[in-house]
Image 1: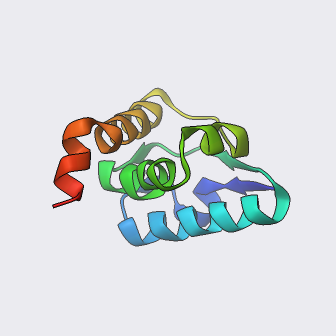
Image 2 (image 1 turned 90 degrees about the vertical axis):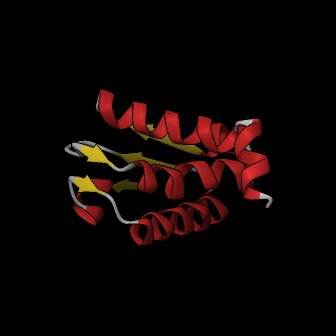
Image 3 (image 1 turned 45 degrees about the horizontal axis):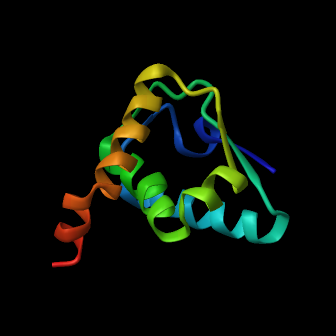
Length: 102
């Protein structure tokens, strides 16, 4: 299954609520079909909070291997890609782990 992000969430995305919905939808589709494609064509920006809620928490909860094997993210602009990478990196850093456990 492919989710066209701009159609469902817009081209400039900043809502943690939307990100949580995307994360839950991603997990349910992977559970049903084994994989999912997230198409970011036409998405211009994502906030760090959206990237954290949609991707970083997903990688933290399910693991990097699960994410790499189950979720394909396509058509990322450079700014969107960098935002997602930074959010995942920040969430998975040792400093973040100690902050989130307090």
